[in-house]
Structures are given as structure tokens and as C-alpha cells.
Image 1 (cartoon, rainbow, N blue to C red):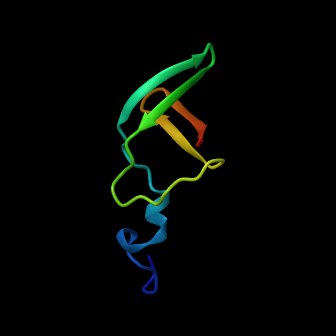
Image 2 (spheres, helix red, strand yellow):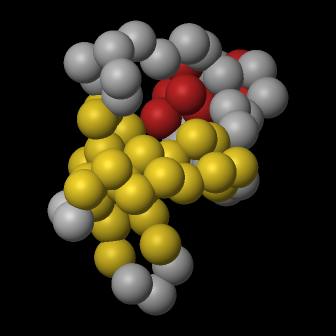
Amino acid sequence: MNRNQAPLEQSEDLFLAPRLTKILRSRQESHDTTTLVMQSPPNYKAWNPGQFNMLYLFGLGEVPISIS
């Protein structure tokens, strides 16, 4: 980190850092679609419909998930 760069805790980059998130509920919508209701991490910016996030399952892989 250079002298002019804020520490990660104070930086916008923190928004992009992976966070553990609890899945509160899931609902099978069809044979290939599941709705997940997740707990938002503390101090997280709001998501908007049309955006996506990456869902990582440790040891299994990752997948882009759309927000609606």
C-alpha cells in the first residue's frame, strides 16, 4: 500500500471484499431456479435489481447471482 492509499478498512475496496453471508431461506421456483433470501452483511451498501453478486460455496465453486 502506498502512503496516499487509505487502509482497506476505510476504503471503497472493502465493498468488493468477500463477506460471509447467512442464507435465511430458500425456495425452489422451478427445476433450475432457486430463490435465496440472504442476510445483508453489516454496513453494506444497498443492492439494486439488475445487479449481481458472486456466490461462493467453499470447496465447491462460484456462480454469478442476479439481484431482483
